[in-house]
Amino acid sequence: MNVKEFGADRAETILLLHGGGLSWWNYREEARLLEDDWHVVLPVLDGHADSGTPFTTIADNAKALLSLIDERFGGSVLFIGGLSLGGQILLEMLARRRDVCRYALVESAAVIPSRLTGAMIGPAVGCSYGLIRNERFARAQFRALHIREDLYGEYYRDTCRITREDMTAFMKASTTYSLPKSLGETSARVHVCFGERETRVIRKSAEALCRAVPSAVTHRLPGLYHGEFSLNRPGEYAALVREIVGGG
Image 1: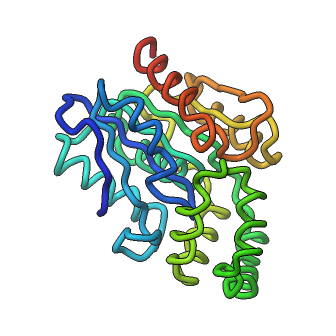
Image 2: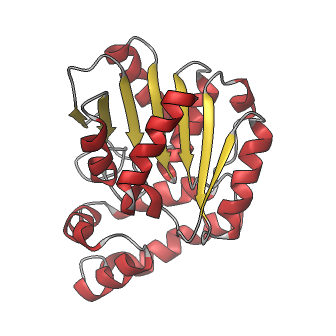
């Protein structure tokens, strides 16, 4: 698994898992803000540019990350955060190992599966995939994602390097993901955040997460769309990490 590391000489580790279609740069600014105090590890998820591994399932990504934690960090870390697809992989990790981390921050993760939407992913990607390298189409997609402008170059470069098979696989997996039954057994202090302008599915998913983990803390983010918190507000995100780790 390809990872980027910051503050490698620090004792305790923070793991941050990027959203689908993005890459480690999703959390680059947060890593720079946190590296003086923690070892920050930014993995490239399977099926994404430079991952070196095709995407199979969310469960397989979770197992690979658990293996990484076993091999490098003694079986557990201080904090894991994840956006969207990364948040779903984080949930799978929490369900598979109750003590994989002490604190978790799940951002904008959908946990209400839609078979109909999942069935439409293949045809939709098949129709649009050929346009990914078209600058006008890429710009329109980028604007629709509400990502800050300085990330466009990396977004365009890495999106063009995702195969149609991988894109179809991780989008379908994300759309059809449902909460693992064992999630409620986690010993991690779980925090759930979502933007005020997100879709109904994401808002309802946050409610479902808090029912599954009754001790979870919810953070409703005023005025934000999907993914804007970690992508566009790195200072605020890093501050929340510090608050969570400092006060639970």
